[in-house]
Amino acid sequence: MEIRLATMQDAKGILSLLKANHVSSLTEEEQKEGFVTTYFTDEQMETLIEKEKGVIIAVDNDKVVAFATAAPWSFWAQWPLFTYMIEHLAEYSFEGVTLTEENSYQYGPVCVDKAYRGTGLFQKVFYASLESMEARFPIMATFINQINPRSYAAHTRKVPMDTSGTFPFNGNKYYFMACSTSLKEK
Ligand SMILES: CC(C)(COP(=O)(O)OP(=O)(O)OC[C@H]1O[C@@H](n2cnc3c(N)ncnc32)[C@H](O)[C@@H]1OP(=O)(O)O)[C@@H](O)C(=O)NCCC(=O)NCCS
Image (spheres, protein in one colour):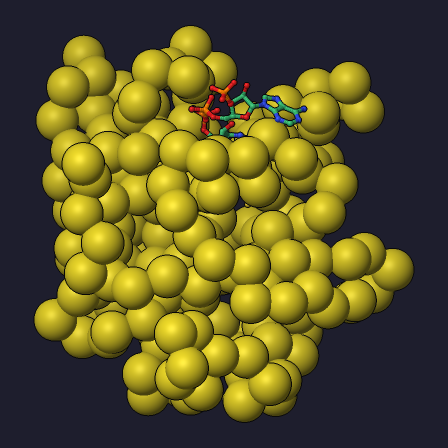
């Protein structure tokens, strides 16, 4: 198993794992094991990989089996949900520090192939993603749909993210989460 920054050669494998976990590919029953709502075009994936250096992957036997994306808010501003989060950033704080577009970035989506869930791979990819952004930002922020309890359990019990608040958007309710980029796996 190799955990590393993605290159363009990995783009196809990342998009295929993303598609398999996208809400549009899953039955209601399957969504109970988690789902993602963000999708990337080939061009957006290229920007994430090449410009933002924002995709950490786990590769096993030449297959991408997990990934976590991360980028500055400026990258995410092309989606309405993130525009909403950016507009409301100042309402959230982490350890007494008010979030800004300069001191924080957005992590996610994150996906772990079904066959590798519950193995500790999630934590490894999570911490590798944090480390890859540590020199650029002190605070990582993300959101979790309240109807994705598996993801919320993973981000609070397997890694210690703080819930900074909740917000509604487009008929869904979300947790607003944050943590320090200096967190390390114990
Ligand atoms: C979310 C995800 C990355 C977490 O990785 P993982 O390897 O499944 O995480 P783990 O199994 O280590 O931890 C999840 C925890 O949630 C628990 N859990 C599983 N299903 C659950 C449910 N429906 N409700 C509440 N908790 C649940 C697990 O039991 C586990 O806790 P435990 O080990 O203490 O019992 C992975 O499940 C995934 O890729 N899901 C599909 C895509 C997704 O939802 N991405 C996140 C979007 S924000």
